[in-house]
Length: 255
Picture 1 (cartoon, rainbow, N blue to C red):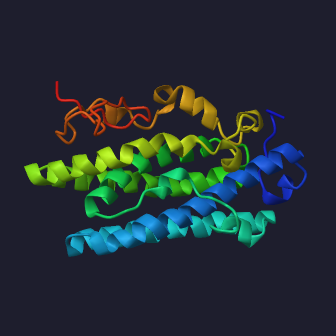
Picture 2: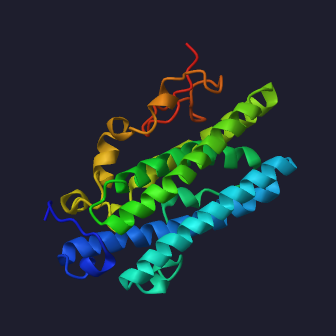
């Protein structure tokens, strides 16, 4: 099965059941989470954006996230997946990172900077997927995913220009950071179970990412090597425990 290549939706109907189920889980997961993230983070953040320029770019991010949902849902429909399975609700819980209650602009900037880097890792898995329609969709959406992470970096750089902005951003990062490891916890629901690499739908399973996330964070070295990218201090919890960078995100350590 590891040599299986499926070039069309029609060919997918002839693929082994395990493969078809793994592909369906991936499509459902992305369709659900792209929509839910846009609803709970991106669209509400427009109201928090401090300037017309920030609102404009936030509108663009929200539009693109909704667009990603539409495109994954369209692929799922072509595959015969019922529409209700690709929508939040009906017993389906989106990723745990969406449980964070967004309250400020700084929190949204931190989410774009950190969570969208983690999302790049998820999409990167699909760039070499043996189901070509899913592979092609991932390649089409990846530039926008990178823009969303860059959005977070750019607005973070603006915030840390003042001591007050830097403190607010650091507080937001401290609040959101503990949610990030949960990004990879629902492997059975996401399609990134231990069987996903076997079918080559995803190169790396969720459990493998949790065991060794730094080695799998290939899109992010340019961030990790720039210690002073934002001039911010080490990330730490309110208890004083410092976090490493388990997802390959910036190690903001001023040495």
